[in-house]
Image (cartoon, rainbow, N blue to C red):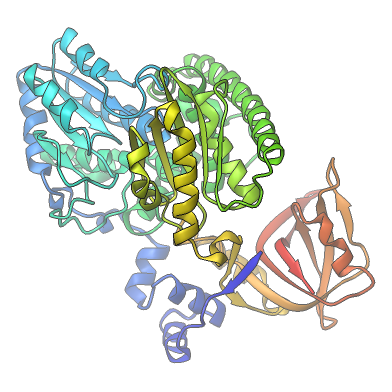
Length: 563
């Protein structure tokens, strides 16, 4: 692991912020590292307010979108809410359809089938709208590149409103309105909304026109927070405000679908990490194993006992997903070893029998194992389909663009992408991708990195500091859980391997005969030899609470150890 310690901020700025906020050096340093320099910026960070949300009408085409929806409601037109089959798409469809149903009964939903239709707007979906007399389609979390699909709908007198957050191409679809803050000519102040976030701005605009306050939309924010967490968008600006309020809804008055998924958990309070690892995979499992419609049905169900039935079905899908994920990952690792491909700078594997719904997860697992740009292919109809994942700082999308002559289609962003190609082009693409990555990747990008916020001593860790760190939540990209480095640690002699397979490490650490702290290192059992016999070592870690026999204490969650 490569440890990268952030450059310390200017001491003068640290002192000024300490004085303005009456905080300690550690807190002031962490805030400055997150771009917070003033009292007002700190207020927005620690105490987000509804007033800090931007006016939705600042987004390009928002007025056009609202006017077209109002016209559809007035004329009693049938509206189809269309979204992708992942968490961002299904939560966005649940959000938009449930809000619109408070204004008109003429609302239907459509999630494309991952296997027969693939990602994004589909011709089958447009035909479904046509067959059911829908004259307006609102597309969420997709559509920014669907030029031909929008034209096809237009020929059938069906209008489109697109709510997307993916990178636009050179040409924008000729829809009635295209809401996407990433458009070059869109002056919306915050560019990093997820698809469900863009959908929320549209219902916020509709609510404003109805004379409603934005606070009245609070019940929808459990969906928005779930999408923000799952889509790994920056936890800054509006995302942070919406996620913070959304987490409050999840923990106080969640919709029955979310309650049904979480009610058996032995947790007093769910964090954004719980949303990422508990709620999101279950919502995703519907589209991966069966159909994304099941996720929308769960998230729009208002009867708890019916929601519990839906949730138990989705739980089965999630169990199946886990089994497939483990099996395919094992097969892919074997394929890499058998073909002696460990020395390449990319991982590209293919098996026609692999389940299309889990190849994205398998790509993530392989990236964790070999830490290099990874693509996992499977058979999909008469083509091969793939999911790709990147490593930190390497632009996967750019690399795929350079190899696009071998591809039928591709889409995505810097760290994740999807693509299709003809089987006869697989070998040529695999080689072209390897050559492109070799030419453009820096050697350090192939080594996993731990970003360290600052170096501290153990005696600086106090319950008060931990209480302040908790207020930095919700954590996510650009507001990660603070990581600290402490040097010259010694184990007190109780270090041992733990866990069913003895792969984890439990230690008690001291520094300069000061206070001792319990610590746990997941997957760090092989580091035991570095700390035995009172050897001095350095550790990077996060601070967390540990509850044992009713006693709560602070402990270190160790990420890596070095002598």
